[in-house]
Length: 239
Image (tube, rainbow, N blue to C red; front, side, top):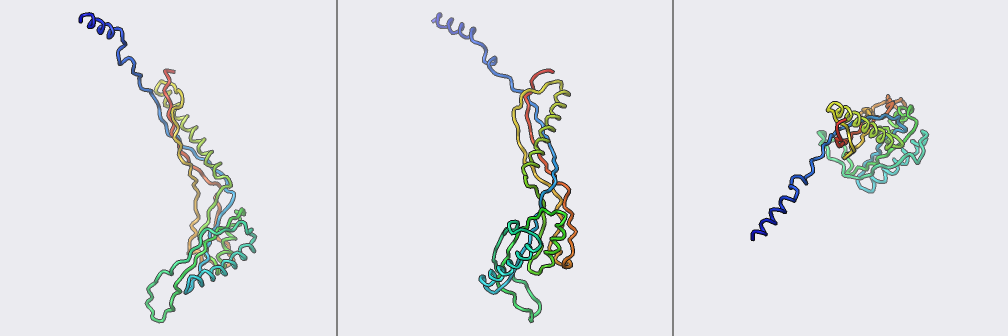
C-alpha cells in the first residue's frame, strides 16, 4: 500500500501543471475601413408606361398591344435600337374604383392593362431631349430615369480596394500608438459596395410638359460607390 502511494505522488511531481499547457489568448486588433470610388456613367435607362383601359381583360390587353406597337415605332424613330427597348413588366388588373360626385359621370372601364418599358441610351447629353419626345406622345407616360455602368463590379471593386487601404492605414496608426506591431491577418469581413447617384426628380407631374421640349435632366458626372470592410490582425510583438 505504501509503495502505491509513493508511486502516485511521484507521478504527480513529474507531470507538468495543467495550467502550463493552456495557451495564452491571441491578442488582436480589429479595424473598420471605408472606401469610395467614382466612375463615369456609360448609359441611361428611361422607364415609360403604356396604359389602356377596357371593359374586359381581352379588350384591355388588345388595346395595350396596339398602343405598345405605336410606342415602339415612335421610340425607334427617335434613334433607339429595338434591342435597347425591353419589357420590364406587363399586367392586367381591375380598375380601382373612384367615387364620383356627379351622376352624369361616364362609367370607368373595368380593367386596366399596364405595359412598363425600359429604354437604354448611351447618348447621355441627349437624355433630356429623348424624355421630352416621350412626354410629347399621348400613348406613353414618362416614369423615371437612372444611370449605370457597363461593368458594375468595377466601381464596387475599386471602392473595396480603397476600404482595405483605409483599414490598413488605421491599423498601422493604432499599432504604433500602442507600441506594438501588426502580425498576420486573422479575419476579413466584406461589406457590400453600394452605388450612389443623385436621382432626378422625374415623376408623373412631368406629363404636363410641352410637347417636343427638352426635359432638364442633367446626367451625373460620376457614379459613386461606397464600401466597408472589417479586418482583424494579430498583434505580433513589440516593434
